[in-house]
Length: 112
Image (cartoon, rainbow, N blue to C red; front, side, top):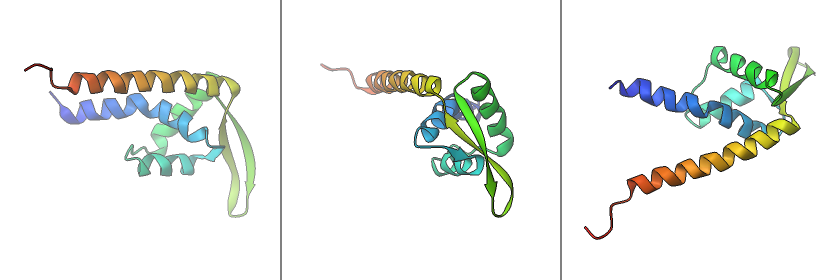
């Protein structure tokens, strides 16, 4: 078993959920999203994040807007759409159920 590969796949599996969660707090610039993911130890490079953002946008979960910057070119800010908010709520329910299921598997059997 390749433990590092398994850990990477687990992180990758929750990235979309985490991106939607980050954006539920308000629109964010890509570097802000990367910073939050790094802070959570879900290290992502821009090359990984941009395709995810594009996929989420194409699925109708995200929108974006351009905003002028005082220190360079305009910046693209992403935000949740109404559909994105609904999908996030469903993912949150699924996540909570998954956490509960994993916790149950970790409990010691009673009566032993």
